[in-house]
Length: 130
Length: 115
Image 1 (cartoon, rainbow over the protein chains, first blue to last red):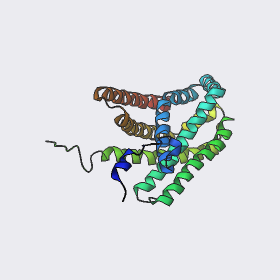
Image 2 (image 1 turned 180 degrees about the vertical axis):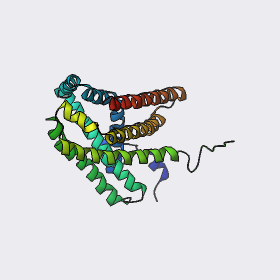
Image 3 (image 1 turned 135 degrees about the horizontal axis):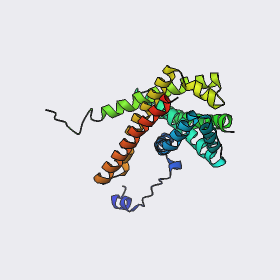
Image 4 (image 1 turned 90 degrees about the vertical axis):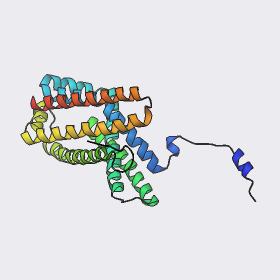
């Protein structure tokens, strides 16, 4: 017969590291972080877009800004944020209509979202930024 | 007279729907833009400008931006509701987000119709 009072004394240990989240949870928190990052850097992106269309001089200036090594790193991060947010968002649209809700499918599509966005970030980052 | 029940079904459905519709608009624009970009391969200012010159392209891009700003509002509102508990601070941040996004919408319109 299990002793209820012993059970109460057992230590609680919550591992809250995002890397120990279930895969759908990891996709979810990254969806939120990527969305927030895109919002916070929207000012910079709109500024680059503005300059790129304003005049040949400002286009050149925007190009110089965007091709600075540090800017490239930020843009690569934003490219990943955009792609992850896009693919995770498409996954949520399918979940909305009850597609892929069971655990094996939810795990498989989570891996799909994480992998596709990382691979596409590498490919598009290489093609556009380097 | 409007009597609104703040708990239960359908409260917040508007935001939920705006988030989804704006997401689809942005996804479709992204694919169309990628195709147009690869087809035109604009490498200099003239080519880049020519890509955005057709009237329909400006309207489509404006639709993308409006969707982006509506989408950002719903998302940021969700984030603020989850993490910012003091009502006054949350309201202030929500107002700041709204004003920022409305300002961005004006900016985006200016960028596109100045071309």
